[in-house]
Image (cartoon, rainbow, N blue to C red; front, top):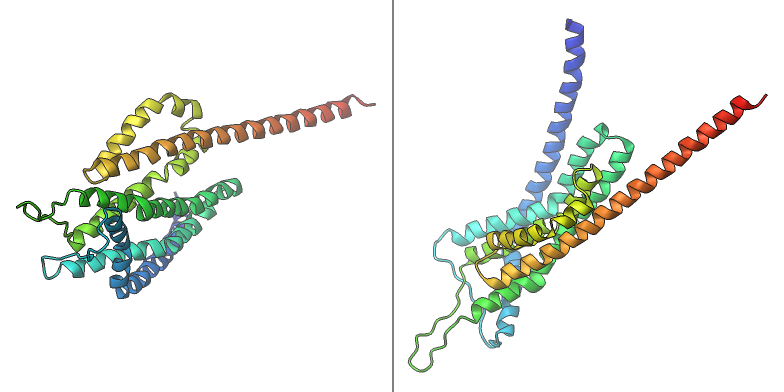
Length: 281
């Protein structure tokens, strides 16, 4: 390889590296700004996350009880606020980060690949937020209600046993549930992408349904706290999403077949027209 060929190869690589640095700066800068905003409102955000706990207290019939959380180390609540800021900053900055990834990758894709990739870029965060909303509105109160039911009142000479969650452990519980449900809700997106590239088929997914059900309960046991309410609560939506993924794969295969049929019809019509022109005097 000559020196000129090496220079021609190095210039596009350098241009890609410069663009990559620019995209990373935008993504990191957007996350840092969102992190600072969330850290400034960290206490308000934590109070918002405590709302499901208050719902669980009402479900348990403890309406007059004061909602109280504790921290046992001087730095615990400070690091809890940092976690809240990082989590909130990532959620807020995700559209910007995803846009930078898409802008970096898009020039190397064909037009049909870009049109296929963009809907998934929009659907993925929406499904994640849907899973997070389900956790916030239903599953977190249900899990906390399950734990509150284990309390023991000071009656009949018994020792009073009350649930006093630590701020860090409460936040870890909610973040674990949100990440678990958010990732599970990506199942239709991932399956549809794999079906587009031909790595999976609807019939193949349907034939492995029984293994998927077992895997759903195993994943729920690993990703959620060790209580049956949250484990069943994650496993059942996972199984439902698996069925939706099978349906989405069938749609992809049907559209691919229709596209292939239309292409074959166009090719046959072109061949017929060419043969007619050839046979005409």
